[in-house]
Amino acid sequence: MTVPDPALDAVPEHYYVHNDHRGETLHRSAAQAIHRDVTALDVGGGSRVLEIGTGTGYSGALLAAHAGTSGHITSIDISDHLVGWANRLHHQRGVTTITCHVADGMAGYPPHAPYQRLVAWCTPPRLPRAWGEQLTPDGRIVACLPIATQPSSTLIATITLTAGRPHVETVSFADSVSVGGWLVTARRAGFEGQVLVLIDAQGAEAGRLFPAN
Image (cartoon, rainbow, N blue to C red; front, side, top):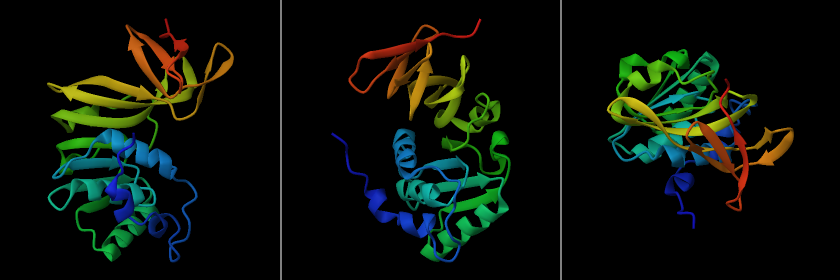
């Protein structure tokens, strides 16, 4: 049973995604993917969060709603156009707990570190060391990462830090994955040693991905 998220009702998606003054942002994460990853991030009241990929500003507004008035969201993007509009839209709604900056997400954002949570809407070639270094020892990362043996496939990884060291807690797939020439729809996955086992929507094993030699 899915627990309703009050933030979804508190944040007007249309205001950010289809704003009449800015126009529609064509290259953006789907709302369903945003909701999934924000839920996995598990942002609590008072959290300091780094968002990599400002986009329309909608995802940042959801994070701000979860973090509450005592939290703070730092959102960065390489596009000054997106950053400028997101700051403007947040200001017009009276959201003061989020600031957007132009920066390269691969380097994180040291000025506001450390963070309890980090979410990335981009797909880095591997987990950047800077992300882990800018998190608190018990921090959490949700990001889309490539699969080494399947370069055209990506997984959504929830990564937690224990004593400053990253550990993959869960992984899931948003789309179909090619395994041995077959197109497999996987909704979650788990590790058996270094082997990634894909699980379908019915809970059955859908395939396995082995590490590159």
